[in-house]
Length: 140
Image (cartoon, rainbow, N blue to C red; front, side, top):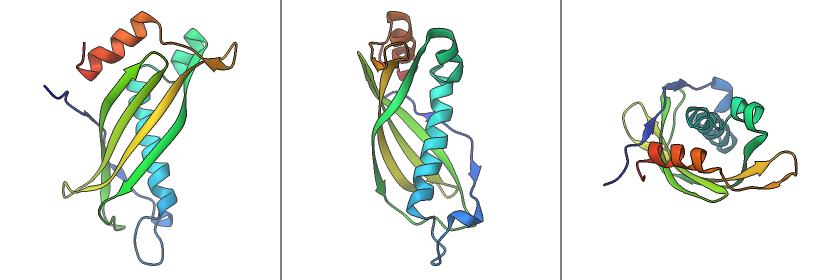
């Protein structure tokens, strides 16, 4: 069974993010994806409160974006994110940017590494955190 995606709230795009063709610029896709993935990270309880509580955080180490359809300035986007994998020290998210007409405009795969701030090195997720993420992913 495929786990249900984590649905994000629609966002209105800033007019400054569009190029002279009236299309969302490539850097704006990165900004939107980053903001929307950060909301998912917060929902997974891996954001700022997690860092304050545990001294651990996650860092982006790789993102691949596929541009699939145009985004025009009158449209909104929302995220549809799946937890593709969580193993040891890494978390992989696949996020589709979905237009208000339900067309997928872009898809990104982002890999994060779990880091212990006291050492500055990658560290395995503790069992409770890994189990919580796995349960949200629907893979427990």
